[in-house]
Each structure stands twice: as structure tokens, then as C-alpha cells.
Length: 191
Image (cartoon, rainbow, N blue to C red; front, side, top):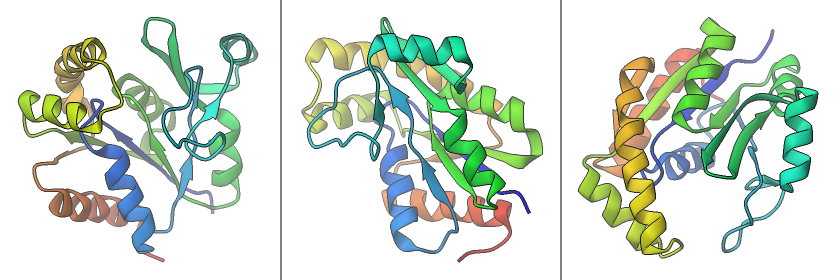
């Protein structure tokens, strides 16, 4: 039986990556993480092939031309992110469920492509002010970058109604539990 696809999208700083990692660490859900590709430089302790596939801009563009991506987006000017077709197809063909941590436009596209084989979950920040506070607390982005991300987040929050489920992350433990329940209901069982 082919694996299913779990799409988790949110504005930057909403907690989607933290929620996904907590669910995966719990061991309650039978799913594997799809590592996205990007042409940005690694931040902090990020590792190529684990956190992202870090590609040069030239390699990313060649991948687009070859059709290597299920979806990709120029999230910020000159900054691309995408889901490699190989990351999803091989796992699903082997019967494994795959979770995608992707931007909202990509999440919408993947849901359109895979239909009922995918569930889409939008992680909503409790407020724009809280989102700004979280981004500032990360201490990895400049004030200009944070301003750009907050502005983009306000736009991205308009996509929430296009997703199958919306989980508000105003309490991390509750958001993890709510997201895990959606996933377990969709795939039909835990590990």
C-alpha cells in the first residue's frame, strides 16, 4: 500500500518545525520527514541532507528545469525552497507516510497534486505580535528580515481556509497534540 502525505504549512515562526519534530520524537506516528531543498546558506547548526538539501542557486535552477521538484517557491527575492520529487515518491512507493514542512503556497500545490492521498494542516500563530516576538527570540535574523517575515506572514495567514485543518499554536503542547490527532486520524493508526 502506498504511503500518505502529511503537509504542514505556516508562516515563518509559527512553530510548524517544532511541532513536527515533537511529533516525530514521540514515536506515536508512523511517518518520515521529507527534507526540503533551498538555495540559502545553512543557519546555525543546520546540516545538509538533514535540515535541508542546501543547493547552489545554479543547481536549484537546473532542478527546476529537469522537473526535480513537486513544488518550489521563490519565498523571498532570490531565495528558493522546494520539495524534491525523489524525497516523496520513493518513500510513498515503499509504503511510508511522508511529512512535508513547506510554505503555504507549496502546501496548497502539493494538496492539489495528491488530493485525498494528502492531508494539509495550517499552523496558525496566535497573533502577528506573538509571531514577531518569536522571530526576535530566535536571534537568527536581522530586524529588517524579521519585518519582511512578519509582513509575509500576514499575507500567508490568508491561506489558512484553503487547508484541511487549522491548528492555532497558542500553547505548544496542545498544538502538538492537536496536530498529532489530525495526522493519526488521517493515516489510520500509530506506530
